[in-house]
Image 1 (tube, rainbow, N blue to C red):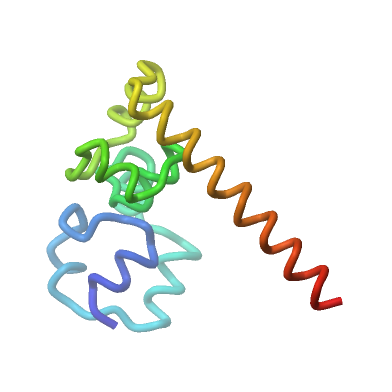
Image 2 (cartoon, helix red, strand yellow):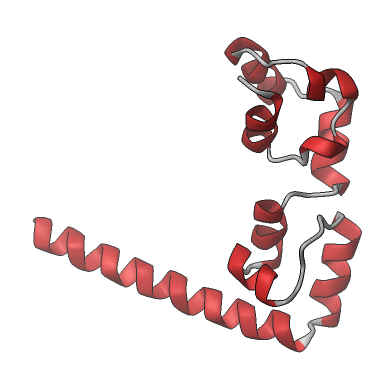
Length: 118
């Protein structure tokens, strides 16, 4: 698979990975090896970032669209994410509430569909 696909599966930003990872291809066995026994560079990237948008959104408890609405386009580090969580800017509070409402509604719809299927 392409390095970009492997980086997504690993939950890391491709540009922050080592050169040999970015320029090569990753086999399924290599990906499984990285998942089971991550090297130091992967452990450090997952711990401190910079993180890709899906990871940033998950850590902040918002959607990717919520990040865009807030103007967050660049990858963030774990320290930057922690700062936002401590400062609780208005956009973050609003987007977290919106995200929670959407998740609750999705869960309700899923329960209703499951009940109808029975």
